[in-house]
Structure formats: structure tokens, C-alpha cells
Amino acid sequence: MADLTTEFLGIKSPNPFWLASAPPTDKEYNVRRAFEAGWGGVVWKTLGSEGPPVVNVNGPRYGAIFGADRRLLGLNNIELITDRSLETNLEEITRVKKDYPDRAVIVSIMVPCEEEAWKAILPKVEATGADGIELNFGCPHGMAERGMGAAVGQVPEYIQMVTEWCKKYYSKPVIVKLTPNITDVRFPARAAKNGGGDAVSLINTINSIVSVDLDQMAPEPTVGGKGTHGGYCGPAVKPIAMNMVAEIARCPETHDLPISAIGGVTTWKDAAEFMALGAGNVQVCTAAMTYGFNVVKEMISGLSNWMDEKGYTSTQDFIGMAVPNVTDWQYLDLNFIAKAKINQEDCISCGRCFAACEDTSHQAIEMSADRVFTVKDDECVACNLCVNVCPIEGCITMEEVPAGQIDERTGKVVSDQYANWTTHPNNPSATAAE
Ligand SMILES: Cc1cc2nc3c(=O)[nH]c(=O)nc-3n(C[C@H](O)[C@H](O)[C@H](O)COP(=O)(O)O)c2cc1C
Ligand code: SF4
Ligand code: SF4
Image (cartoon, rainbow, N blue to C red; front, top):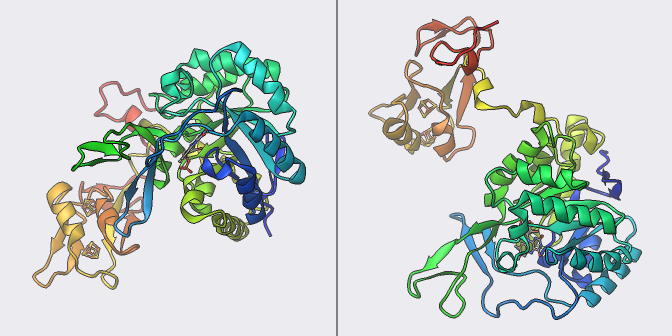
């Protein structure tokens, strides 16, 4: 059976599934039950400075986007960092770490962007015996307006400066949690590395308004007739998070920076995808909030079964394996030719592929009088739209046209040579092919 043990920054955990800093990890009661359910580690709900804790709204704090079956696809929240006292949290962290030495316990921190504030809290966190810290440079709402969270994460110089303070006053691993509310994630990632950060984690939530109450004429969640932007997370954000993880993993300056991936992880497959793109482990929030702590059991068994099938004995066997295959558009092989093929036995004649191709693609699907749908190879550009709109999975497949055969659309023989845009004759700045 595959070994799911992971060692991230030297911190061992029995599996790569950690709970992200959020409501699932905001108290001892939760974290103990999470560990009993099987989670490999937790990032404790973000701690703030000593003194009166922050105050959350007393109205609704979540908005959501649903699929047609009311499955939660995206969650939006306006919650702040922990609203429990620093002292209580530190006591609980100490007890939990002592009782679960084999699990990763990371403490998330967000204090003002002043050296004294970090200098004051870091020794207290170190005294808990927790395995490391995560710097919350990501919260997009509430705290950002107070000069913390995303307000720091959007300025690489601040990221570097605070990370340096943390390395100065704290001896264990420092993970820098990045905000996606920026243009190019490689800048904050480089700043984290330059500041001495041991790893980055991403993504925190995305600025968003998920819906508008058209009776109150206010964004939702609506608190006393007003709404504000919140942080978006859940399955809907996974593609954005994966691209950002891949960008950091393949950037020459940050490719060796360990990554803890966050954003929409709901199944073992999501985790495997993030890890193939270079993440050493994953963190989960929305899936635990939607399905409860036991969701980790399926993640563990699913990942383990898949690894057995593939012959991977450890997570190290596949971490980063997809990174060399992430490239820029201009390097894609223009001599790769495919055509859509409709499997008539599975087709239910709904006509969606026809409508999509006829109205918005390449008029490459023919509909007969008795509603039999077939692809015209001499028109199909292999865009794949029909595959994505077909309600029957696997009913339409993309079939490669082997080298040596004629592409009926162009009338040319398919070449077995790789050729990309950089050398293409239509490219005004093409370089001569070697
Ligand atoms: C209600 C809620 C509260 C959150 N609070 C924090 C927090 O205190 N600190 C933090 O770093 N991230 C916080 N997050 C962000 C999550 O840790 C995570 O980055 C984000 O939800 C994306 O992961 P997911 O798609 O699995 O939910 C919060 C998320 C939610 C939904
Ligand atoms: S792949 Fe694109 S062009 Fe080809 S049949 Fe499907 S929708 Fe039409
Ligand atoms: S969308 Fe799929 S099921 Fe519907 S007609 Fe096309 S191939 Fe058949």
C-alpha cells in the first residue's frame, strides 16, 4: 500500500491533507476531532495581536454559488481572523500539539506591519511547540482595510520585510500565505523567498461579490441592508489556484520554493493535481465546511488507491511530475492534429454539440433528419467545445490524426515533426527553424 506520509519543510504528517486556517481550525475542540478523523495537519485559524480580539458581524457572513443540483461550487465569506483571545488560542495550541506529536500544527499569524508587533507575538507562538508559522498576507476583507492581510500581500517589499522579521524572531519554518488578488503571483512569491521564507502557501480567498439581493438592492451576504466584498473559495477557485501554483513551480527563481497548495481541494484527485503541479501538500477549507471532517477519509483512500494503481510508493514519486509539461502557448505543437468523434451508441440526440459547433464554433457537426449527429472531419478544428457541452461523459472524444495521414480540413499530410509558433511562417517575428 502506498505511503502517504509527507515531510514538508521537515514537518512530518501521516498524509498530505492539512486543514487550512479558517473556521475548521479555530479551536481545540475542532482540531482534536479533525485529527481523530484523520487529517494530517492543521493551520490554526489566524491569530492577531494581544488585546481585545477583533469583532465579527452578527448577521450572515457567507454567500454562495451553486451548481444545478445545489452542490456548493463557490463560497464567499466576510469573516475576520480569530475573535478569541490570543491567550486562549495559545493554550489550546500547546495542548493539542502535545497530544498529537505526529500531526503538523502550524500557527497562522496576522499582526500590524510593524517589527515590534511581530517581535512580541513570535516568542509566544514558538513556546506552544507548534511546528511552524504561516503568515496571513491574504485576507481580502476587514483586515486589509486596517493595513494587514492582502494589504501586505499586495506589496512585495512588505512581504519581504515582514518575512525577514519572522526569520529573525522565530526559529522554525515560516510559510508565507499569498493572496490571489494581484496580477502576477511570481512577484510576491519571489519576495517571500528573498525574505528568507521557507515556503509559500496559496491561495487565500479572491475578492468577490457573489450575488445581489434584488429586493434589498444590496450585495449578499447582506447585513442590515448593506453588503461588502468578501473572500471567494471552494471548487470554483481551483483553476485559478492551480495556475498560480504552476507559475511559481516553473519560475526559475522560485522553482525550488516548497508550496502548500490551497483552493477548492474537495477530492483526492484535486490534491493529486496540485501535487503534480509541484505542491508538497494541500490545505482544505471549504470541503471540510461543506461535508464535515470525515471527508478526509475519502481523500486518503482515494489517493492511496490511485497511487497503488500507478505504482507510486510515496508522494515524492509524483510531486512536480506535471511541471515540465506546463509551457507557454508559443511552444505548443502546431503539428498535433485531432478530430472530434461522436460515439453513436452513447448519444442521446440532445443536439447540444450541434448548437455549439454550428452557432459558435466551426459548423463541423451535421444533423440528419432523424437527429443523428456526425462530425465533418473536413471542417473540424478540434476545438473541443462539443466535448465540453455534451451532457454524456465520454460520448464525444478527441482522436489524434496520426502522422502520415491526411488532415481532411487542410488537405495536408500530418507531419511527425514538432513545430511551434516561434518558427511558424505566419509569425512575423519567427526565428529560423534549426
Ligand atoms: C470562513 C472562512 C474564514 C477564513 N479565515 C481565514 C483565516 O483566518 N486565515 C487565513 O489565512 N485564511 C482564511 N481563510 C481562507 C482559507 O484558509 C483558504 O485559503 C481558502 O478558503 C481557500 O481554500 P478552500 O477553497 O479549500 O476553501 C478563510 C476561509 C473561509 C471560508
Ligand atoms: S471539436 Fe470543435 S470544431 Fe470539431 S466538431 Fe467539436 S465543436 Fe466542432
Ligand atoms: S451533445 Fe452529446 S449526446 Fe447530445 S447530440 Fe451531441 S453527442 Fe449526442
